[in-house]
Image (cartoon, rainbow, N blue to C red; front, side, top):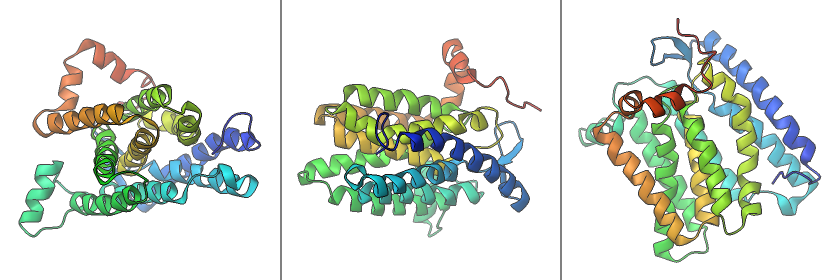
Length: 279
């Protein structure tokens, strides 16, 4: 992928600018098309910044293929990222009251298809294809699949306030790179998305638009893939335990309420949101 010092370094520098341009154009496009949702303060904002991440990343990946095919990302990873990004658009573009695993699976038991349940089905199928391509034992492939799915959806559980999911993604990506058996390879995978996420972070923090399921699923899947490919099985199990705990907690408690009730977490949550429009 695109690393400092490689022949594709200019692309890494241009990608954030391109992501920002796409992000601002998407906000205008969504408003013209009426694709807006009410955020936590009742303000109508654009529903999904996620496509800006993907559209900012793919040209660089394509350029790397042309410059140095050996440094290009495997197509299985590109397929997975594209799949997880766009399956999240169902939740972003469709407004429904059902939420949480209990809500979506409960509706499914009643014969009602929800956007969330459709996303689960698609995520499992896309994840099965990716996990099946890994040179692991069946048990390790199952661990990889669960880690991928829970990581992708887990980051989305934090996307309830401006910038919150990104504040989990950046430390998570940095931690994986630090703990990776091959830090260079992990950075090679995550760095392009990190710079793209940094580029659109101001749009999310100022509440001009939501990161959305599309963006959160994409970034969460990236963390999951990096953990599966570059962390030891023990660390993969630790990450799986963490995301399982997040899901279990969010089924019964409000993450936002816990953050608001903690002065430290509340300060971190509001960090960088000084330009947020509270009107």
